[in-house]
Amino acid sequence: MHMITWLFSPWGIPANYRQMQGSGVNTYKWVNKAGEAVLVKYHWEPVAGVRNLTGRKQKL
Image (cartoon, rainbow, N blue to C red; front, side):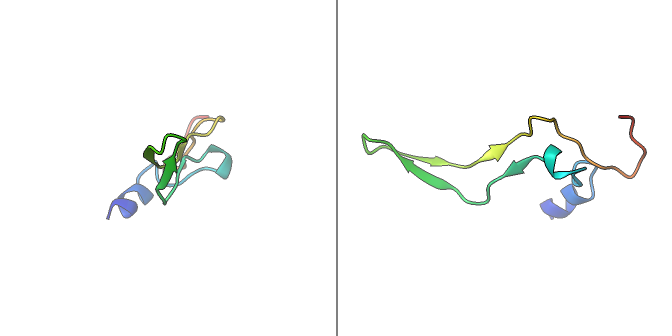
């Protein structure tokens, strides 16, 4: 339900791959030299800014 809500919202349809936010599906376990573990999940923001398509006309 969460995915469908995002898909049909103004934020759900990226204008192009260059301006699309992303996140990793998997969680990784990083272990440092001291043996301490940390769980890591990747999220990224595009340097070019985020741009999405909407059903309405947009001002660019």
